[in-house]
Length: 342
Image 1 (cartoon, rainbow, N blue to C red):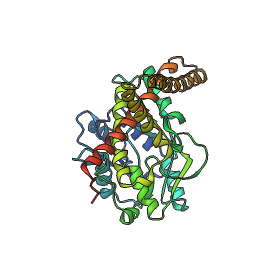
Image 2: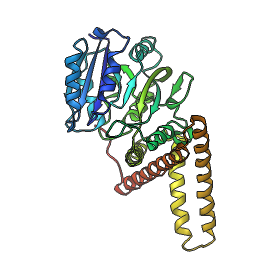
Image 3: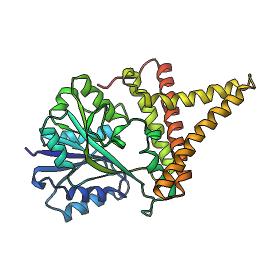
Image 4: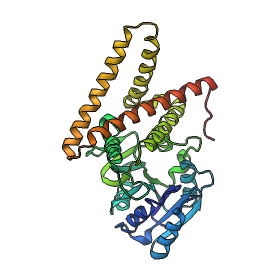
């Protein structure tokens, strides 16, 4: 049995797949002790060609490619896990680039019994456009998705202290854990990792965050792709909360509350005109907070366009995530239930 199976779900990731595979090839962990299993959702770009070319050029790495016909992340993870032969499973993402000691440190923490699922810090960098460049908007998105105002107390985006948490990005765990808590929930198109960690914690397990375990994560490159991503995040978070309402955190309450407040105030101003002043005040205070963040990050990074792109990205995240969550809860209530995973 191998020590580690690295699993990667992907779909149309030709822009970043080579960066991930090169980072895996540079791992300090012995190459003969781990395998890489990529679950591809039948990509229509050059992703598979990139993988095959890398396999040909790096025969010392054991790389397997399996199909993920459902084309969703949780089914891809499950397909990869079913094909895995390692004692430990380490999940990575096609948008990520792990540090050279990533596998080694995950392995060490699992062997030491630090937690049932262990993970580390995301260092978020701007995503690439079609020609491999990062725009001023992409830079703002990268800053926004790592800023406390944008992500609240999601410690894996910025903390320097090792601690037990409610979730980690990606995650590393014993293969046997699947027999205890089950596979990833394929009824959730996103939030599958958080839901998986909920089941681990409900079974008495712990989630360990070690900031020495680090990976670079490439954020979405455009505002439109960010909006699409965070709408999906919010929508499927709502589906998960319908089943696990006690997992709601304060950072997740504020965006839907703000969106709901805007909608309610906007409707009420049609009947009570002076409430329009409160609506303007609400939007003004929020905009002021965003402007302060924009000034701070643009000054600190000596990047003037961040003054505009960072507030814009944070606002897009809040509004779309909050709207998606509210819509999800509303439609779940109307349908009177949401199906549990088998």
